Length: 234
Image (cartoon, rainbow, N blue to C red):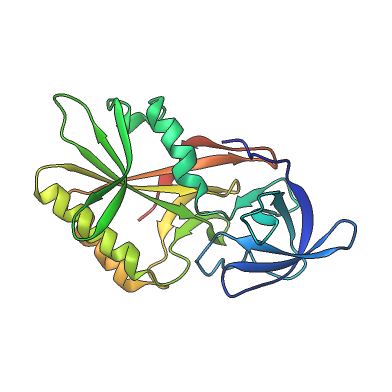
């Protein structure tokens, strides 16, 4: 998934009210950017960090910049926009790049299911059970090489696991797909200390037959693309 507009570098001043970030551009102009991430962004929102912003000239948007990347200034990047995984994965699913799901030819995003929920992707193929695929963006890193989810308490995430469990019980296939938007991680685990309820819901779901897929990404200031699977360390 290529960025629609060329990204520009900046320095973070502060992130506040979850969706706002004050930044300084290279010419020292101070601007406010939209932060498309409702999580805690632990370790990713420290003042002085180098970040990359996507400018826009959309008259309908109040903020003219969107925060897209953290540049760790060691060759590694983290993608902070939580809308990216669904966009990148839709193309990958439609072109059958995700090995465990490559048998499915029809990909439908945002389909209503369960109790007032929408599944990120509903996959179908004649002769196969429908596959309900829930996607989560992973950005937390507290140990070298280890990506973790979640970075804050997520009752909504636990509810999604419950919905997936019910899909398996109804005879369908259900998949929890974690997309790691970091280039410095090779393994994935749950952050059970941050949200024990989510970890418990995950244990119940996997025991019922909900599958786990974890995939990495290649990230540059030009694009975010799907990379290789990561080891799931539970």
